[in-house]
Length: 532
Image (tube, rainbow, N blue to C red; front, side, top):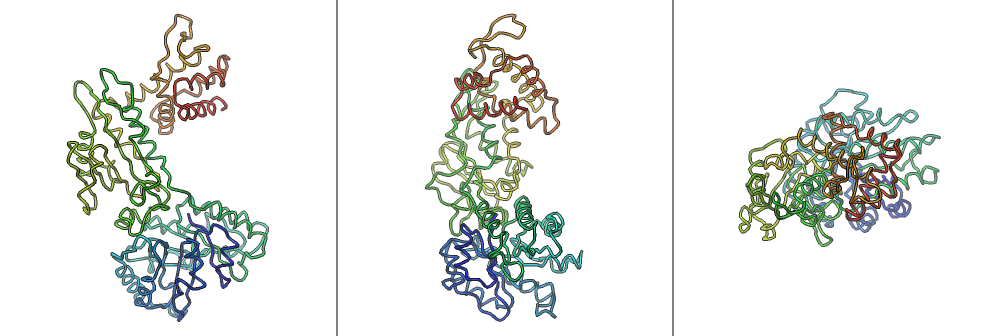
């Protein structure tokens, strides 16, 4: 989420010095005033600093707005709001209801297919207190597809809770499916304002709000107040981070590696290596679904061609590459081409677990490269897709944290590596129980262990240890979903009571069988379980 300020008449360059790492600035153009020059004292410093601009205006004609946007420097993210706060009506100098909706429709139509559409987000600015006064009045709701709905949010009496003040923005966002942002945030000085500021920003961030700007004018101006430092800190803490792999795709990646990256034997053939399952593009990768908001490019197809991608743009990489593998189950071979053919067939069939996939670039035979595109815009890909399959996910699904493992779990079940969900749950629990015997009763070496009852020795299975990280996650998922009664925590407590666990020795034993990064994750998880 981008956090910044409304200058309220203060010099923009001074505001930038006061608030380092500003994410966004909300600029207001009052009735009868021209649009500010991109190289002038208001917008020039913001462009130089790479700060996003939210500009809302009152009466400027569409021709003037289009000419102004045509001069926008490439790379500047612009949130554009026409007819600022229109719902107060003609008595306040605002358009009539029908005039407003007509101008909104004309604005959206004018930017359809614009070469910088991915950098230009369109949406209205409303006043939350007006909507509170006329609760249930939906006449001003957008009648055309917009990218956001902005709100001016003030705590008029004391410090009203986020749950109170954000009820209306949340309800409108839920019903329209359009994210909200806070164009103006404000509250008068008082002993509780700093805590309230943090609570409002945290709540907005949890909602997926796009921006929050503090209104620096009159009694709301933070300049020189003790709370100015609080807002400085909030801005620094909310500065967007670099492109990141989302947990949902990391989970999907781990699931594939768990079943397709194993020791070669009579059942399994060519391993899928960790380096062959990628999410974030390398440092030279610019644009496309492997990049987050910091690495997309002007007119990036992974942003501009779908409102799902435009409104979902965030730091997350939204693509998964799957490399070559081959497994044999019950005498039948399964490999990357057959997986890709199966995947595309599921996408074409519109199965529920493929609804978030934008495109698949693949080769059905290791020679010819094809592309399935949900939007029907592209049909080809480069030759690297002869040996890896690229899967793009719509950005809004990744931003929402929607689970992407069901599709891949269904594939593994279909080819017989996972017999069924119930069988896998039982297998996970059984392997964990076996692991307890190998690890917690194994003395100083995991290579030799004895049964708890001392009935005889056996070798601990490296394969079980290698699967521990996944199994812990799987059991947590099963417990959370109520699919199985898993007693791991109770078993661990019982083992601790019997006094046989030395966490340091356990860490050393696990490290002997796993790469350093994997070992650390496993040890940290076990340490947390033991501590609780």
